[in-house]
Image (cartoon, rainbow, N blue to C red; front, side, top):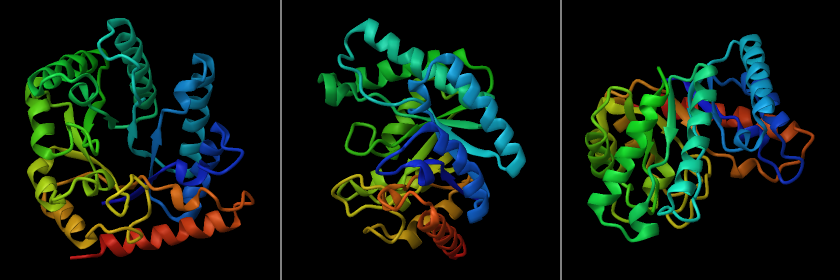
Length: 283
């Protein structure tokens, strides 16, 4: 596995948190020692289409200069005020599709998507929740020509475990471009959930990872060993499951309040690389 990170490991900060910092992060991640990158498109989604196009072209240039590629990416995610309102759901769908298209233009092989929790938010049945998601993402996979969509376990929601993610994929047609993303922090929020068992169930259909830690209470997005996750079990499962993707940090909170002169930020990033290499060397 290559060691990769979301770009907000550099750009998330107390003040002056802008899209430009996400672009700067490409060079900083290379300097820190990362092998590859991940870009979340929630912030980019807020830009105009012209600004989005400019971001993509600049990111392409900077990634080529740094000889860095994307491990994966993350489509727009968030809540819809009323999931039962077809107009609102359609507007959300268009935002999701646009960010998937942007990820494809940057060469991401997979883009992580959040299943929609119709059960928790609208009180729908399990069957209807799976059906509506299957319809939503079956339409999405047909709207983009090449990129794969990876369903993420979304913490304290209906799609919190491997069995429910697998049921969604089956309902959506078991398309070869549907896979999964396992978020270790989300998994740790579910009392009694065995992350090793769930990762093994997903097997080779696991295409992406979100590596982050917490103490089982909040979705803190800490670095490994700052929370309560059993990391040797997680690493063992990834290696034994047939997973062929990268080890991708989705952990930015420890860096959020560091000074904006970047001195400590870069040093901490170098530490996270050492930490990642340590984890990946585990048997």
